[in-house]
Length: 358
Image (cartoon, rainbow, N blue to C red; front, top):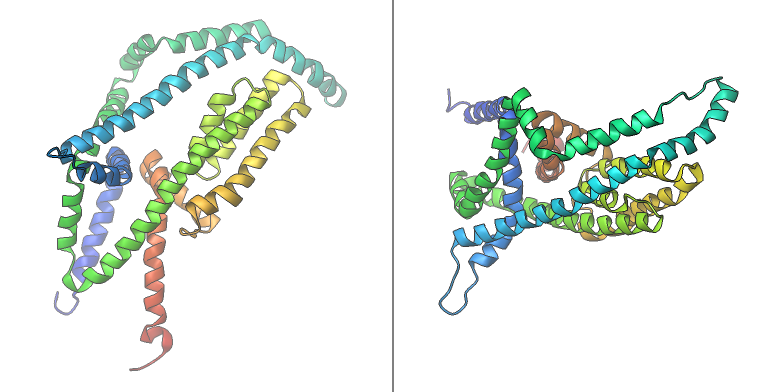
């Protein structure tokens, strides 16, 4: 049976593998995140591992630990800057809410009474007290952690386990990355090794260009949005600007969330609609710069995915693997697109397409 249908076994194995991935998707998230980080960081680990100074040459393990220390230190530094600033700004904003609400009431209530005969009966003092108490309570991390452990202990333990698992998996992947790639290459049938290597090299070039270029775009757009919103006088310019830029790797999410937060903050701070015009100009210019200058120059058109494919890939990735799936959606789609291009070329040269009997 296997001789008559040599590909049957591989089709069955592929279906079983896809089924296992789907069934195990709830626990695959930390492994996917670690794999993404390992792919990005591996070139730097290779360079450090190959470094020689006189008789000293760092081991692969030392290079991995150094890169991981650099990455997590940078992440911790960003959190230590953004979170306290955000807490301070939101607390300050909550203290000013009554004045903002009164200004909004003066402009909105007459229009509502004229057109809908509706009055705004809102206890602003109570709203302020609720927001202030809630934010001050949320700042007490230890207390909230204790309450969370008592009410949702298993969920929090699972989250903490995933957070610990990510650096652990990342460490082993980086240490053994080259060995794993070599072992995988030995499993590929010899008659397919040349074509597989060609496709793998092309996929690696696409992913490298996409990931490294996208990181640069995210950094530049964070600087642009922060500077632009600061020039408009927005009090939450720094956290909103950084958030808008860093979430730019997810199409439509960064601009949508950043614009929404900026408009809400501007309405509360300035109280008039015409003060939103500078905010809209900043985000409009940001989209023009990102789409017409930065992304074509730094990322390029190598991925070549239709917007509908992008939306579907993001939704499918999020449905299967959560946040890690969203992170992985576009790179995986780009890799699949490379495979489809090779398959299309082979199909156009096939006898089935050309109608040739020879």
